[in-house]
Length: 224
Length: 224
DNA sequence: GCCCCCTTGACATTTTCCTGACAAGGCCAC
DNA sequence: GTGGCCTTGTCAGGAAAATGTCAAGGGGGC
Image (cartoon, rainbow over all chains, first blue to last red; front, side, top):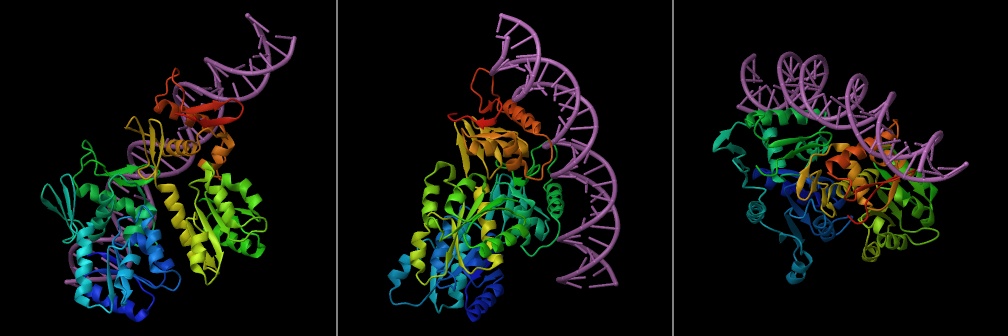
């Protein structure tokens, strides 16, 4: 299950996309404008981006996005209106990982989404030493032994493990793992980190998978 | 909390911006002209720059600013009047990190400011000879050996290293690194500088990374 | 209803930060 | 050169802050 961000100003199209995608087991975030999209980008595993938006052309959003180190590798699927000049479209969607011309069939949409997710590594597996995360099954393994992680635990671990070495503040983690609608305290993160450490059977003598940077936040160990 | 410089000649707009930004927890500096702005640039973490200014077009200020090594990476958010010729706007705002067309909504403003600040503060590395600061990892390296710096130490070092050769008084450092709410003595800075020097293993025979300017303050060595 | 997960508060522990006192060093006047 | 004055370096103890830990309560799903 992945988080897909649908950027589309036409409500009917947006709802249609959402229904198809949710039915296929994905989580869907929605934005009607480029500005809204920009705020939600951090939470997305893949973006479905409409060609025309009220505030800014989709391509321009794409450019801005690509020049931001956080989103360099974020898969983007461009949605374009049917046009005879498909070459032109291709040129303009440069930077997108794939595109679809409207109207498109649901199976085709799902197939391309699936392919992109698999390709991007946001679906599939993350391997960090003896720790393996199977994102599709939502299952973690340590030395090939399945771990019993809850949803939040798994998502937190997966998020941190995706960028080893990089520090995230509690606030960033809340925003990107919990979602920005979360209104609780930042200490919640600590609790989940503690749970994870226990389940990962990290004993004090061996280096931790999840490192604390006092005064800053947490990070996944660089060389596990 | 960051320092935002609002460059806008229309008092009403300026005040509106200030209120929104202060409410969001930022500190705001204001300038009504390009000349005023130029003086305050050194204290800003991000600039909100109006397109039209009485003494000089905002874009020209932007150009001057970009060609000054001190401000090469200073994030600039351009404020433009709504215009049909969005392509023209795009061309002219080159060099800006983002832009907003007036009138804009407060949430959008805040979201973009937030995004820019995160991008600027947390991305990239600073390399000064054998000393490397990885801001994303919040980790310093000396000859590729990771250093164990505390939060304040890292932030102080990062701040000084960002502007090699430039002197900062203890008061400036307290304000910029500690934050304006800090109420302690200036000697605290000395203590942290001393800690840093020790951890950087600077021996008296080799030139120091952190230089003392008697009666003035500290600075990062120019050619490390 | 029951169970599991998430969240939160209280308390314990660890680490960092700050400060005051004293030592050392530079600068100037003589 | 040398003494005094002012600035900076050094050290260590205590305060403050951040994190770890534990346990209980609430809410949602089965």
